[in-house]
Every structure is written in C-alpha cells, then in structure tokens.
Amino acid sequence: MAKYIVTTSALRIRSGPGTTFSIIGMLYKNATVQGDEIKNDWVHITTSDNKTGWSHSGYLALVDETLPVVFVATKDT
Image (cartoon, rainbow, N blue to C red; front, top):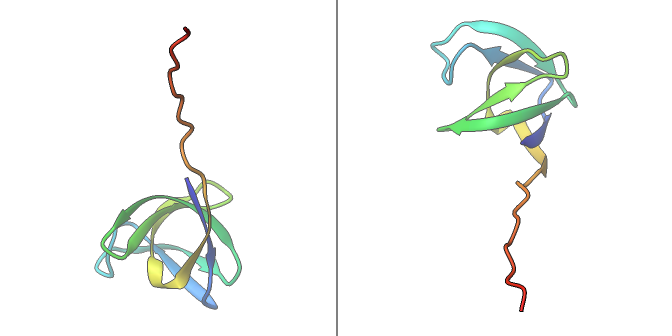
C-alpha cells in the first residue's frame, strides 16, 4: 500500500472519485494517508483514524510505496 502526504492547506475527502461526489471529510497539510487504488486522478485513501474516501492526487505526494513480497521458487540440485 502506498503512503502519501497532503501538500495543500486543506484537502477534501469525497465519497467517490470525482467532484460530483459528496464531501465526507477533510485532510490538512502534512497529514499522511494510505492509498490503495487510483481512478483517473483520484486516490482511494485511508486516514490514520481508518476513515476511507477519495482525494485528488494533485494534492498528495507519494512518500513510500510498499511493494508486495515475491517468493521465487528454487530448484535444489
């Protein structure tokens, strides 16, 4: 899951990926969130208090992306 930081003074959290969806919360500068899905320019986020919604990627900076662990099978000889 990717980790983002809010880069603007105030950022709306919306119920869906677009400005036509209702505002369900706010984030403020330097807040960190987890992102798990991207649709167009919108990131599905989870806040530190486990609220979920969508915020525009233009106001979020990627700070860390945890890649999945991959196991490679080896053949014993």
